Amino acid sequence: MNLCGYCPVFERQIPKGKEAQPHDCQSWRPKRVDDAITIVDKLMATHEEHKATWWIVRDMISADIKIPTGLYAAGWRMIWKAPYIDDDTRVLIANAVVPF
Image (tube, rainbow, N blue to C red; front, side, top):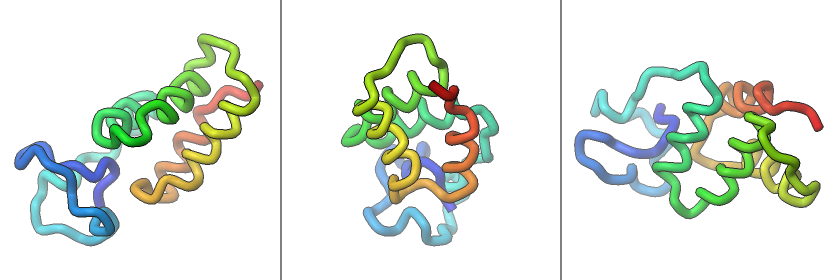
């Protein structure tokens, strides 16, 4: 299974809908990272279409700035609805979010 949906060897995205499929390429199976910020940074790098929302999630984790309620809700929605991350990763990211 792949967390980021990206193969660093071939430098291309895994085809849409195939992220949850087992793959023969070992490069498509990165080691699990236990740091939520690192995971979110990798998700921002590999999923440009959701980069702005992952930035919100990153701010929710680091708690450097006050996030408006609507953006906070968008960040939670991204954590629980992103189709390319597994449930263990969702929980890890959600546990790292600083309560407001």
